[in-house]
Length: 286
Ligand code: PLP
Image (cartoon, rainbow, N blue to C red):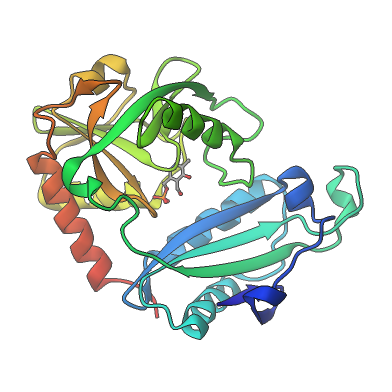
C-alpha cells in the first residue's frame, strides 16, 4: 500500500508521523472520507470543498491548493491501483512541542490513504440495520459545529460504544433540544406517507451523500422536507435510512426494538438505493 505523506508517496511501513503531531496530541486537524468506484472518485470536489471549509473554520492553512490536493488524491488511488476504494484525507496542525497553541506548529501534516473497500454493512442492506438512540448529544452551539469534520470524533465513538453495548448496528444522536441529529457516521432520512424528511444541517455534518439523495429525490419527483424530527417521527416512520460515504444508502428496520414500517427495506429506500448506485457507477473523477 502506498501512502501520500507531505508531498511524497511512501510504502505504508515508511509513512510515519511524529508523536509531537498536534493531530495526535490534541485531535487538532480535519479529515475527509471519499469513495472511489471503478477507479473514479465520487464527488471529489464536494469533499475537497468541505475539507477546506472545515480547515478554515479551525483556522488551519492546508498549504496546498484544492487542485494540488485533488491531484494528490487521484495519484494515491492510481499508485495503489485500487478500483473500489475508501480514501482518507487527513490534515493536522502539524508538529509542535507540548502545549496546545497552534502557533507552535509551523506547517500542517497532510496524508492520504487509499484502502480497498466493499459494502460496509454486508447483508444488512437487504435485512436492514438495528439502530439505537443514544444518550450522547450533538450540539450545534459548540465551539466546533457538527459540520466541521474534525479529528475529534470521541462523541461519535461514545455513541457507537453505547450502540454496540445495546446490540445496535448504528447509533442515532439527538441534539440538546431533543431533535434527531444524525448517525455516528451518517445522516438520517425518514419516509412518511410518500414524503422524505431529513433534519436541517445545523446539528449534523453536511453529508455529501445526503446532498446526492436530495438530488435523487428531486429527480424522482419525491417530495422532501428538511425539518426537525423527534423520537415520534422515528418510531412511526414508514421507512428510515442512513446515508454516508462509507455506509452509502442503508435501510434501518428496527429502532430501540421498535419495528420500522413493515420491518423490511421499503419501496422508497429501494428506489433511492438503485438511483444512488447508478450515479456512483456513472460519475466520478479520474
Ligand atoms: N455524519 C457524520 C458524523 C459523518 O462522520 C459522516 C461521514 O462522513 C456523515 C454524516 C456522512 O457524510 P458523507 O455523506 O459526506 O460521508
